[in-house]
Amino acid sequence: MEDPSERIVDRMRDESAAPGARLVLLPEGVDAAMRAHATARGIPVVEVESVLQGRGSGVSLRYTGQGAHWTPEGHRVVAELLAPVLADALRAA
Image 1 (tube, helix red, strand yellow):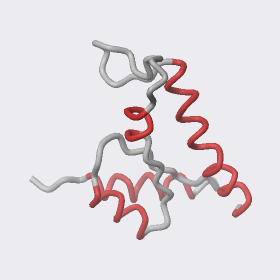
Image 2 (tube, one colour; image 1 turned 180 degrees about the vertical axis):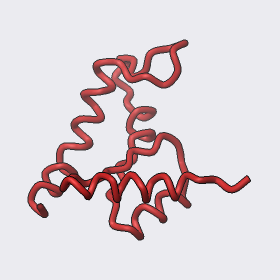
Image 3 (cartoon, one colour; image 1 turned 120 degrees about the vertical axis):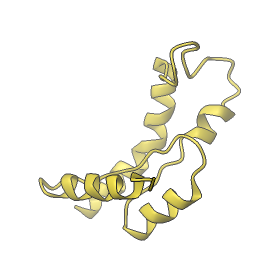
């Protein structure tokens, strides 16, 4: 069975663009093919996984035993990562 992920990302980009929004992809995990696909289509890609794993503050960034949900501190870390990307998107609009 074919992986529909690239078509789904393209559709999300198109659906976002219709009302004037812009899709930003935050993949969790390393997927070079998806990163290349998004980049080729002008979709900004923000790598959050390495930052979430690499924070040595001793503060948990994910809840344990509940999937990959971010803690409040995890959300703060990702927000810091997204801030310049969103600022660029606003300037480009």
